[in-house]
Amino acid sequence: MADWSPTSWVNKPIKQDVVYEDAEGMKEALSKLQRLPPLVTTQEIVRLKESLRNVALGKAFVLQGGDCAELFDYCNQDMIEAKVKLLLQMSLVLIWGANKPVIRIARIAGQFAKPRSKPTEMVNGVELPAFRGDNINGYSADAESRRPDPSRLVSAYFHSAATLNWLRAALSSGLADLHSPLDWGLGHVRTPSIKEQYSRIVGAVKDALRFMATVGIDNDRGVETADVYTSHEGLSLDYEQCLTRELRHPVPTKATWTENYSATGFYATSAHFLWIGDRTRQIDGAHVEFFRGIQNPIGIKIGPSMASNELVALLDVVNPAREVGKVTLISRYGAAKVAEFLPGHIAAVQASGHIPVWQCDPMHGNTQSTPSGVKTRHFEDILSELKQALEIHRAAGSFLGGMHLELTGEAVTECVGGAAGLTEDGLMERYTTFCDPRLNEKQALELAFLVASFYRE
Ligand code: PEP
Ligand code: MN
Image 1 (cartoon, rainbow, N blue to C red):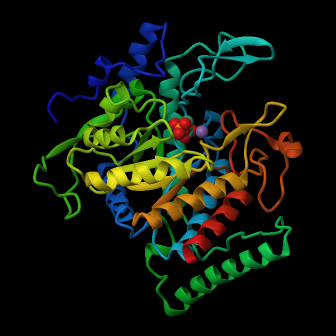
Image 2: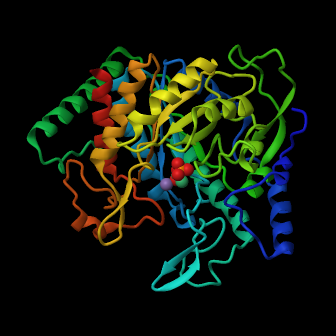
Image 3: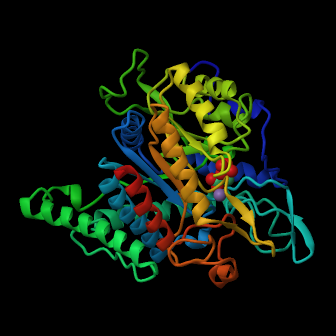
């Protein structure tokens, strides 16, 4: 691509910029990162891109989920496994519901950097620079820890590598094996009718697994392991540029072969999938400049502030070759606004001829604060935005290809509602997020059940 390089973004205006005072430390960190090996391979990236092509064409579904902000401390066996198991369990329910293969992408192994709405925040009555994510500064409430530290970029690489290593090892050693009993515990579900509905779905999924075992179609690698791809917001371009490498394309397949196929391309190797946040998607900004040059499948968050003509112009910039499914549009309007904005966005994209993956993020448009100032989200709003998005796509002859969630395998109390009936009063019991409120494992599984039943309708 002419006039593009992994560093061409530096000439563009940038939002959410981080100013590092330690210039020498920054130079060292970037030079170290440039020499470290890629975290993912071109084969894996292209395989995901081909799968997302199928999602765009309505032949598969994509489930993306994980923490709002990962911390370096989350890099431990229990938390990695809990998150991955939850995604696998949800995807089984969705496969049953949508009757389509489900592509799993975790917000893991690099989801550290966070965009912030304000540069400072009040902590215990003191105004401090905002916490920008573990790869930028420290969470502890003192000015020294809040100073951007370039060595954290290198730490981010090693924590991503260790997380990814365990993810790969656990998957290839049977973590995703459908033969091992899954914990479908529904003990928390209080309403008898909901309990009965979920038990029926669990029964149907178990029957399908038993059937596969009986007829012997579970002998291949297919049911013993599963693909789980990694993703994060590509916010720190300093970091991303160092891990963006010019690499040979894997042998082109029918889906990826294009007229202008060239022997090499630039791959962001920090994760399989990167997305641009809602705050950094300015068409002439630094993030769009960086993203337009990479081969990976990419996401763009879109909310109420996105104009339809701007959306199409943005697609033209990041995907001039109009590869089907190269771009995932991650819509996040909020339950009260989705009906106002989504139809116009779908119509504009349809008229443009672009064929993206449409994914609904029902989290970020539905954040609210309780009277005592705790950030939360209502399960009912999350569900409502998803359901409306699904119906709007159907009515438009379009296809809602997936959902993007903030969730955790831990039993946190951050979002209210759901079958366990969590109320605002119970929020502080286990409120451990460092950024946005996440669905706990029961709420996430419940959401999967409900979405699966929408697809069955
Ligand atoms: C996020 O996904 O955590 C996020 C910050 O989202 P958005 O860019 O949509 O606000
Ligand atoms: Mn978030």
